[in-house]
Length: 287
Image (cartoon, rainbow, N blue to C red; front, side, top):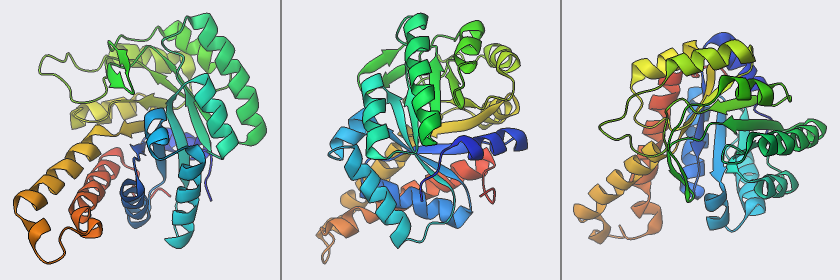
């Protein structure tokens, strides 16, 4: 049964570890993440962007797939199904579809609009027992066509949003989606520390987890980050394993063209990536 992310993140913040959000794009992605979470005895958050939701034909399809898979695979660790970087309209659709958690990304809107929409969603989520993530300061890179420069959030604006009663807060601290460029300046721990001091026990969220050095990840967790998002790294490992399988001509051997065989190496690669991240984040055996 899907759960709100609130309890797992409150526990992670208190225990100084982080829960991974791993974005899903299809059946293979979902199965790989769920199986690995169960094997690692780790709580997990399945992230779904609006683009991925559309690709999988809609949010109700995603909810049905995840619920069915959890039952068939006998998944007992805590699992939250979470909308990633949602518009207000996307959030409402996911609430209706049966998600257990949503993220409203109002970071590209004026702060007053961000506050107003977040406030409305707080009331709905409290009523339905769902968790809500908000964002201040856009994350760099591109996510579903939305481009951010990776500016740092204003800690005072973070406090305004946190005080509305959200369950977790994503604050821009120089992090970006996708691969980090060679001239990346690194995370702004000064900003993160300031946000942490103003938001207290609020679990903080680090987007763009792919490519951030391990020491930075660990320092971010020490400064209050309890949720770390990973997507690009799973895509890269899946692509690399699939490419190797095809370039070695294994798809031409026997029934290697069978999609169950063709997609298997990539799926195993995702599992390895997820396990590596769970170990780094400290969530293994925290279910």
